[in-house]
Length: 190
Length: 256
Image 1: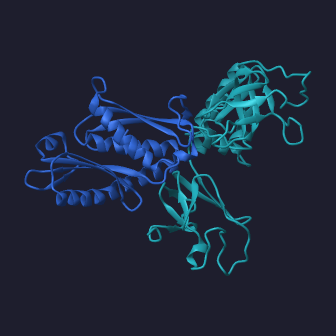
Image 2 (image 1 turned 30 degrees about the horizontal axis):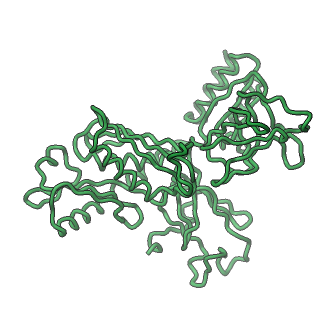
């Protein structure tokens, strides 16, 4: 489970497993993401987040090595105190890493909140998200910090978006270093 | 582009590598290295082709890491690089010896569950001494030790219980008693390494029979049920124990 501050998401990855005939793809693995909220049944918001996560994961997973299989990623929200989508992205990446699926790159999620006065806040809390003018979430790949996914809630100008993107790319370095340290700790035990 | 981000492969041997890391090989420091054949640098005599093992993929300037783990290198015969990663899900590979469980009989072919994404198939003629008249006595639910002859991403995996000369060499149906359990693939590789201390230490405790499948399955049979369960618990715990903790646990058990 990954938790920046108090937001916490538990991720489980199953695969490559046998796919149902209706869902299998002939040349690549069929990736499925299930996001379960802390309370209540999954609604439209969870479905749209699942699609964003699925498209991000499909961009990095080498599905061609496992055709006609199904890879399921299940995310359970344990607590939500802001920046939920980027927490889900980080949890998804760690799950892919831990399971040993072949990846072309790693990715991380960073959320930026744009305050009414123009300042940029990274990883906002729920309170800061409510007060913000716009919230931008980026999924950034480890290879040359390319952007895999960007989603915006609220309105902002193009320059402000570019500034948020630059800040997010800088923050991504810290997250990738955290990935590297966790993996090092894991392999140092054996 | 990728050249600044790539690191020399030799520098990272024995270190943790993450997917997306690019490894540069000595040949590509020269201007006239070709993409097709990997050649060692001008000073050394050409020794053959470099092998790119699990966890690595050829990509233009060098090797792209696709799994996280420790980078390993074997210098003999042109050299080989691979990534030692910890995984629990098995992907069938040709030549691997695995333990499968018979789930169905479809005409002349048995379907076996080997823990991969598809059931493997095993023909009834692929046993030692099997003919059309003399069929092997295999029932649904039997445990079988065999090796893969066909295992790629495009086709259903196929297993046999004889080797290339027609002898069974330990493969075939595994007997009635005993205990089958699953561990991670890394532990199996550790147990199969040439000088494995775990097996030697366990054999001093009680005599037992052991079958290791590369798909993470282990079958154990000892004198009594209690001894079998003790060995199962030690093998499962070996994954997380250090060598000293293991010796302590075994000393306590042999003392009792």
